[in-house]
Amino acid sequence: MGIAFGVLWFSLTANGVCMSTTGFGVEECRAFKSEGSRTLFWLAYVGAYLAVTVLYYILPVAKGGQTVGMKVAKIKVVGIATQQPAGIGPIVVRYLVRSFISGAICGLGYFWMLWDDRKQTWHDKAASTIVVTT
Image (tube, rainbow, N blue to C red; front, side, top):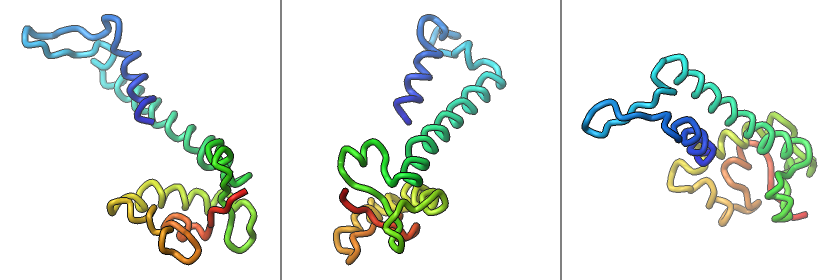
């Protein structure tokens, strides 16, 4: 998502939209001079982030157990009890724990699968899911 932010920022500030405001080389972007335009930019960014998250990470995994990348890697996320795609609730929990907790302590939550009996990461444990090969 950082790349998308950079592309959006560049598109708004390129081609003379930014101008030097002092002789010291400090630039101020006309596009972001007003509070409303900055707010609109951040709302668009957050909206795009949420759309990508829901459309790529949440819905495909909740419905079919896989993102496009998981299909290529031939792996699938399933519920432990059912061995079927886990559904929206557990996948949202899995995504949130993965995003904010699993990598928080030097990535320990991701590496946990290396010594776990079920090969689960912290986000898999939180959502009662497991990754299987297809």
